[in-house]
Amino acid sequence: MDGLEELAGHRVVHTALGLHPDDPTGVCTSLFSLTIRTAEEGDFNARLARTALAIAESSLWTNSVRRLINLPSALPCYLTVGTIALPITGQQLVQAKVVTGHADGRHVLILDLTSAAVHQADAYTDIIEAITHTISFSDPDPGPAAPPKASRILEVLL
Image 1 (cartoon, rainbow, N blue to C red):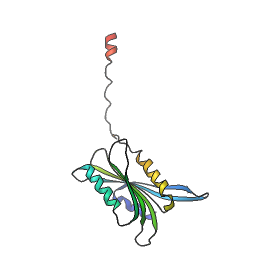
Image 2: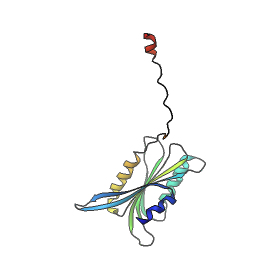
Image 3: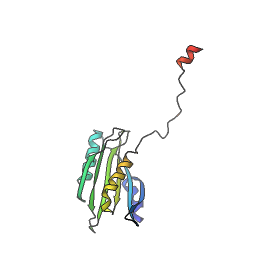
Image 4: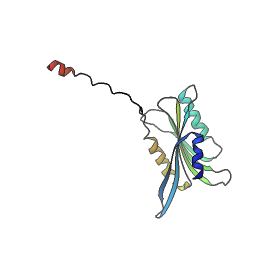
C-alpha cells in the first residue's frame, strides 16, 4: 500500500483495489490502474500497436494471450493477459493489460488489472474487458447549449 503514491510518477491517474470471492470463504485481491500517456507524433494506430506489442513482449511474461477488442468507439484496442514472474521473488501474478486510444488522438490509455490469484485469470480477463467496454469520452466543459431550432411545422401552422 505504501508504494501506491509512487504510481503518479508513472502517469497513473487512477487506481482501485478489488476484493473478489474465491472458494466458499476466501477472497482474492486485485489492483486496477489507469495510465494516460501522451502519444508520440506519427500514425496514432501504429503507436497504439507498438505500445501493446512492447507490453506483450516484456521479459516478465511467462506466458500470455494477445487479442484485439472491438469497442463501440471503433478505436483500436489490444488486450494482453497472462502471468508474470516477479524478478526477485519469482512470485506469479496474473496481469491483464489493455491498450487503447483516447478519442482526441493524442493520448494512449493503458488499463491494468493485476492479482496474485493466478487461478482466476479467466475471471480477471472478463473483468478488464467489461471495464474496457465502459470507456466513453465527453467534453468536460461543453460550453453553452445551442438554441433549439425553429420547427418548420410550427412556422407553417402560424
